[in-house]
Image 1 (tube, rainbow, N blue to C red):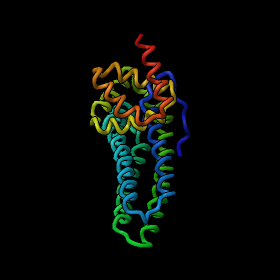
Image 2 (tube, rainbow, N blue to C red):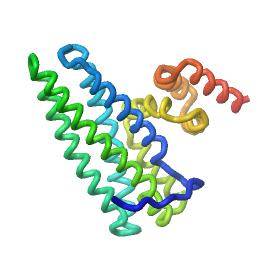
Image 3 (cartoon, rainbow, N blue to C red):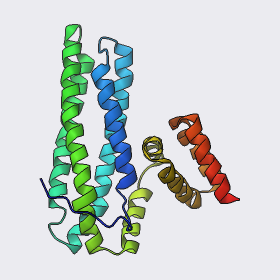
Image 4 (cartoon, rainbow, N blue to C red):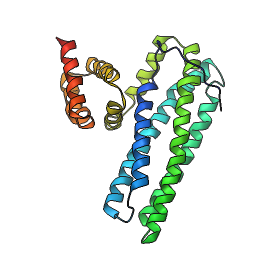
Length: 232
């Protein structure tokens, strides 16, 4: 395991919000898989759809990092992203294994469903643990290497390319996890940034269709109140 370096928190960090979202997704999913009654086929179908959606979000995040972050960093500092790239290869294998376990569960019957569910739960727990450790290394070792290799303007440009390549449906899924994962101040900063980048109609639809359903009513009201104050 790499010795973590402490990055400059005043500089761009495009890992922070999405990693908070993924950690929340892992925690929710691990609890759901562990407490689920796999004999209930309809509820299991719903849970497997949720798991596939979460894994799809993780895959999309991984692909963006490979395409934009690792490639750019290797051009400036060869070998700096090697450890993170190895982790990503491990993640790819985990995605394949988890899908096989999900399919085994979906085709199992009787007592085999509980055993298949337990196998999926344990394998997902290992994957989540590895991913959480990996995200910490990205937020320390890799982010520091990026700060060493790029200016703030270049880092913002890398982030912009990643974000612009995300399809609207996947972006909505990411924001639905980001909103409850962030604290109030971080939530407001994210929405202010999005509001500046979007037409009013698109931003208002995002609030009503994605952000509001993902937050407790009082948290959503607090965010809207602050956005209104800033706009006044």
